Length: 502
Image (cartoon, rainbow, N blue to C red; front, side, top):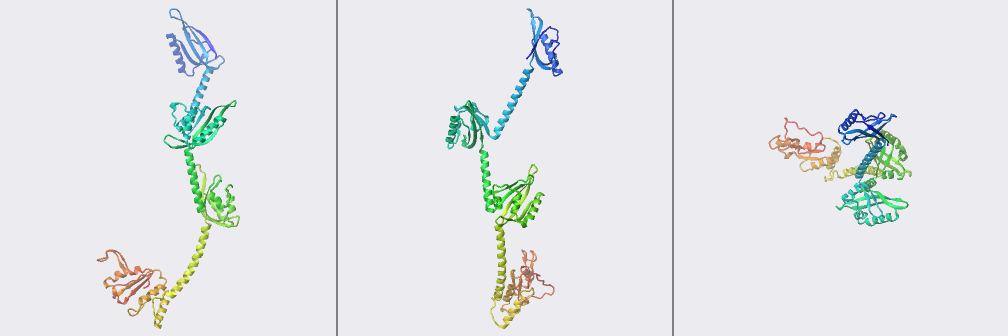
């Protein structure tokens, strides 16, 4: 630091010729001049800071001070002053101020980070006294900052009773041996809730002597809860995949990275330690299906979803049938990822093949059985062995497979309806309805309604729609008993259902 002394008269400007004041702005120049004039008028000492250009042309900050010399009457005889070079001090002050601001900013960010991560730092002496606890630890331990720093024993009291002996033993070993710690334990808060914390610490040594212990502590309750929930869901998923023989996979089309679930490794018969690749997949694809699988992969690269089946050929010669379903997802960064599942359907495929064989055999047996039953039971309700009856039965068997309308004649009680039912049973319509209508028992005024039905309100008493016998016998057989008793009405045509045998 350098200084320049000056002997000033009461009328001068007050600055030596070799120093020129160069304030940063004109307003600052005016302010200094005004302050100097005010000091001249009032006789008060003058003090101001200003940048000065030295004789060598360098600008530096100076502290200018001026005091008056008075006689015995108080009259100012002269002014004495000095200019002290404070450039280095100013720069040092600015650096200190900057460092202080940076330190405050770092401390603020540290506190915010500790609050977000539920962690803090600590330091205690071998005597068991805490010398530092970060603000977040006061919150985690529910200590009152107004009461000052707690003792190590106060912290041990918060530890869960089941964990306390282990924690106390670790602390004793740290102090006795000068070693660090890395331990998880539970603490019990005032409301009875448990928090899981992870503590890591190390000793500060000097000349082989432990001065203090420092470390960090993090509340990992939520992380542990999330990890357990994730583990539980993964276990459930793995069990479900194992039961369903379904594995999952993902394929990042941007990076080529493949990820398989445990069940996918099992289906493809690879060890869990190998890195999934497309080459490993194609080593298992059946040669006859390789082209279709390659085409599916190309489709996936083009942005298409997958839904196809193919075969795998295992090293032992075993053939597996699998079905692949996958969908394309796009991340926020724009990367495309194919996520899907691989199902081992070998057992289901074999079951389908066995069912098909059994179904074919059953159909053959059913055809033979129905033919045999038809032969033996077509006329099981008809009793008689006369030549005339046998002729009637032969004609019925002949007309049964056709769609022709059949007229059955005979006296009342001779079994015309039995013959009609036998014809229906042997016809192609046997699985449909057999509708019998006694024409002699229907009043003439209701014949049309009975045979063809009516809509609601068609006549008095028609309170709802009713289907006619022709409609009921659609695709089946309609038996009109005593059809000769129907009244003839030349003005009204009687139509029959095209889908029913009459």
